[in-house]
Image 1 (cartoon, one colour):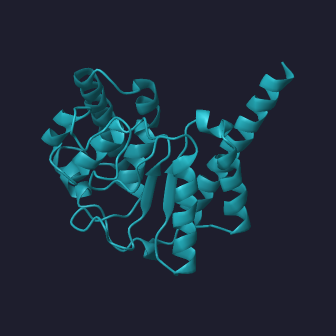
Image 2: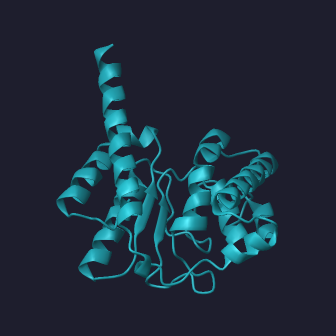
Length: 219
C-alpha cells in the first residue's frame, strides 16, 4: 500500500541519515579528543585477543551469549533486539567511546544512550566486561528488587539514562549533546534507536532539532 511504502521510505531515509552522521563522526573525530581510554581494552587483550577487529568480534559474541543466559534465567527480555545491537555495542565500548570505569561520572566521558531500552541485556553484559561491576551481579537480572531491570536503568554504573518509552532516550540524548555544546564540554553523545521508535514524532523532532542546533557532537 502507499502508506506502507511511505513508511518504508521514511525508515530508509532516517537510516541513511544516521549512517552518514555516524560515518562522518568517525572521520572528523580528532585523536586529541580521546583523553583517556577504557581500562577494559588491556583486560580483553590479556584474554588472547590481539587485533581490534578480532577483539570487537570476541566481545560481541561473549555479550550475546551472556544476554542469552540472562534472558533465559529471568524468563524475560527481547533477544532479537539485543542480538541486533550487540556488534554496535561492542565496537562503541572497545574502539570509539571514551570513558573511565574508575570514575564513571567523569564530565568529559562520552555518553552512550540506549533509546530502545528493552534491549539492555547486552549493554549490561558489555559494562560488566569493561569492569564497571562484577559479572556475577548480572545473575539478578530481571529479579524483584534488582537494579538490573529488563528496561535499562540508570541505577546501574555506566548507564546514562533509564529508557524504554519509545522516542524518549534519543530526545534526552540530543539535549545532552546541546548541553555539551553550550558548556564547551569535550564529549560526544551516541544514541541507539530502535526501528519501532522511528514511528514516533519525537524522533523526527529530535532529528530536526539536532540539525538546527548543528550538534556535531551527536551521533
